[in-house]
Length: 184
Ligand SMILES: [Zn+2]
Image (cartoon, rainbow, N blue to C red; front, side):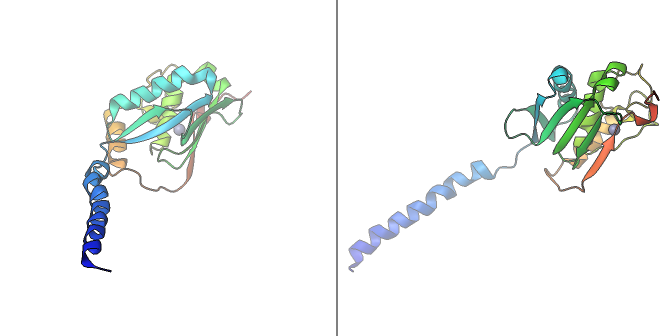
């Protein structure tokens, strides 16, 4: 093989390498926020409230964003009747299932319920003894509490948890309102 054939071949190889290298920075740039996609198709009764709760979180934090999507979602909302009440079964980092209980939804502010459970999916624990201004106090302040927004401290906690994007967290399960559920 003569050199005049080697040289064009080397040029082609360089071009093949150069193309992805040139394009790499556009893909390598870190995202400002991690997006969590959620699906409401199995909780049609509460879709508006779920979206309102997600919007409240989106307004309060910037390191993670919630976006409704019927495909590819990691966070799924469902609805039904469960004597244990509403709950979130989640890894605390955007994946899992949130169940909305009909009975509780008749008693408590529905957007507060969905926003609270979504708070678990974003990594926050329950804090039932907190005031109504805390979202994660859940049913602690009673049915008259209609606040569906995280307070500054809760927002800061979520910002910190999501500061470096996805980080694996131990699987955990949270329930809401069980301490105030009426015994029937
Ligand atoms: Zn809870």
